[in-house]
Image (cartoon, rainbow, N blue to C red; front, side, top):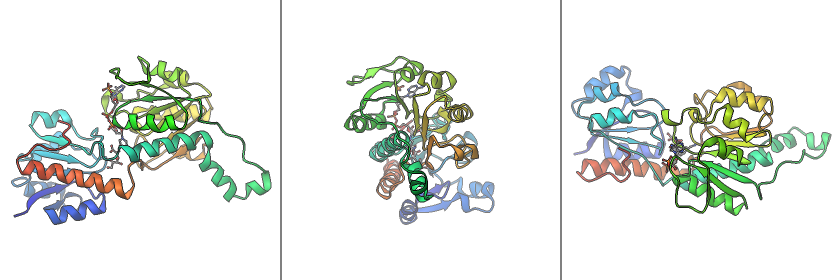
Length: 312
Ligand code: NAP
Ligand code: 8YV
């Protein structure tokens, strides 16, 4: 007999296909009446698979009184109310580690692209401006510059290794100093002051909300660059936009935004920003590995075994 599984949203196709094979799958987003679908599912649902950035809140947990596990597709769980899950003895799992390389590759590509402006230069060539205006203006080298990593965790450490290969110097700030061969700064402002590129890869949520604010961007200064692959919430987005428009920082590379997929159109006009549609983990290989881990966590739990990557 297949176990029941409630899936909150349409996500990675291969993962959904596997879920359809392994479980009796209920697709919540397809239900014409969500409340009625939840009521019907409630007596049998022990496992919920979540994908995307909609909230998994206390009300959803209360609608599923038999719920034991919420398995997230993604390492960041800021969209899940962890306190509410803990209170209800619901396990939350993520997809830690399997995406480290892919996200670090994307972060490094953003650093490179933001300083060297390859995206902008590509547009310049396609618009025929090489021929009409001549060579593209000179850009900024990476070698010898200091990369300040805000959030030197699993992904942050992979980014540091890549940046070393580009001959960058590494500094970092976490709440807790680590046993690593990189210089530690005790706060974000000091890190920004000491960095040419400030790279954000902390979790999202209340603890890090607008951690990168005007004071931090002032410390980064007009020659400094910001790269964000964490969550849009970690940066004060309206302030960042203003700083980019007024060239109070040199540029930004952004994979994440405050209210995805809505990106204020003022960003599109900026020549000093490289913008990506939240795609740091979006390779076929990595998304498949994330889905496999999400499913493995659910199957382990339903077999009475400990999940592989629990968060709470
Ligand atoms: P992780 O291993 O838990 O690392 C997070 C790091 O952030 C830790 O070193 C932690 O150190 C630090 N940190 C946490 N809160 C902080 C705070 N208030 N101030 C300063 N540092 C803080 O997590 P990970 O696996 O590397 O993932 C990090 C995040 O990247 C995820 O949560 C997710 O939001 C984001 N992400 C984005 C994408 C994307 O597609 N763009 C893909 C994957 C992940 P301390 O605890 O010592 O402070
Ligand atoms: C995914 C992510 O884009 O893992 C994370 O925290 O942000 C990304 O890997 C997202 O989780 C897909 O829903």
